Amino acid sequence: MALIRTKGLVIREINVGEADKIITLLTEDIGKVSVSARRARKNSRFSYGTQILTYGQYILFKGRNSYILDGCDIIISFYDLANDLERFTYAAHMIEMASDAASDHQTSSRVLNLLLHGLNALGKGREPLLVSSAFTMKLMQICGYPPHVTSCVSCREKGVEKIYFSSKRCGFVCENCAKTCNDAVPVATGTAKAILHVLCSDNPRVFNFNLSPENLESFSDISNGYIEERFDKKYRKLDYLKEISQVTYHLGKNI
Ligand SMILES: [Zn+2]
Image 1 (cartoon, helix red, strand yellow):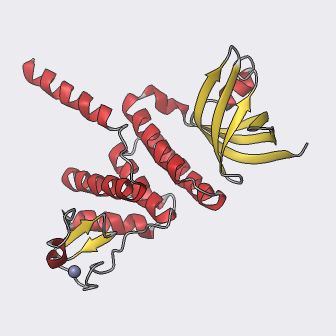
Image 2: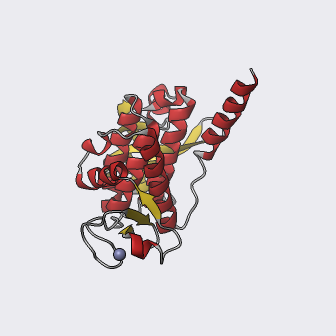
Image 3: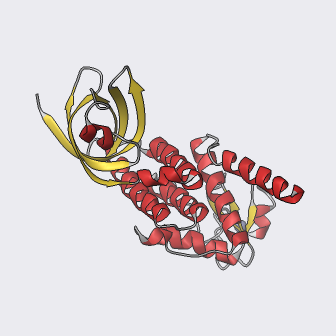
């Protein structure tokens, strides 16, 4: 039986029975695949190699219903992110989006590369909202949905003074056209520059920029709104963090 060697990131792990695991690997060569890891919890090498957020070299063979793990070598583990609830939640959010975006082998490879750089930026202590928002916008570009940013996407006017963003129309719109779409939001100059930076940069420079807190909030809203419109899905993982921060805020006021 032919063995397959591929590099990949564990984006999901499920315990099965007393010793087995089923993992989902986002790979460089064969897209997103489900892998059965027999006795992975009884074998320390397999146990670490099949842990979520582990990037490694995997040897698989194709079974009847899924791939079967035959060997693994860890290249890098991002599992330390699990020690920080906020960063781990952002990582889980990015993984969910990456998993949805990994539609074919070629796209999966590019999505994997972006995700590895995003996790690395999270691990290095970069602002998680900035990393997640930049990741989202770049992901949309990789998936073939780059927003139109060189002129108003509706009337094609260039040199627009007041810029708005419309997820439904896929890009920047001018003030006049913004009046004719129900989802247009104003875009500050700093936010517009951040969007351009992300679209024009390759890894790892995608995550190398700074934004004021107000512009970062706006960039995040635009990125999230854009992926939710294109993928027709609501992403809820970050809601939990917002709830915690609101509770903490109210507790703080009562002390
Ligand atoms: Zn226009």
